[in-house]
Image (tube, rainbow, N blue to C red):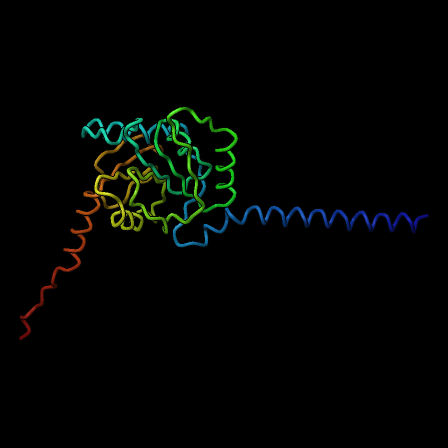
Length: 231
């Protein structure tokens, strides 16, 4: 009887070990989409935008548009404004933008976050009359061409902003605006900013990026003075 109990105990221990192992493997597989960005040169960590941050994005765009009388940035039935969110995460900015009338697109490399956004589009999005359905693409935004967009939104990290600015400067339309959240684009002067601690927003246009690049080129190409006193 004790021998039978020992065998049952061994089997139970084996099953428990197999269960724990399977659970660990499952968690590892699920974590891969969140951990692999850290292996890339430039990565955007998944940090969901707060309600305040989302409000500030559109508050800043509206404030700058009113300041410069940019009616083209206000979406309407007769004016299509294309917005793209780089690293859209769970899609909350894209959904909010679509609710405001923007033709909104989210680009996300994390498979699970992308699938969540797509699922939410089909289950929770109420297709109101005159509004565009949110669009989500699973892609590396470094490989996405930005030429068709009017607004580019990014919740970036300091280490990647300057390289991103170089890419956007080459691809963005002349009247396109970049909305940088959490961090400004270092060494570039914004055309509008909304100060709100961690929820701050900075806006850049093509000219603001272009001017700085030209200044850098001049400083890099400046000839070095040679000392001829030794002759």
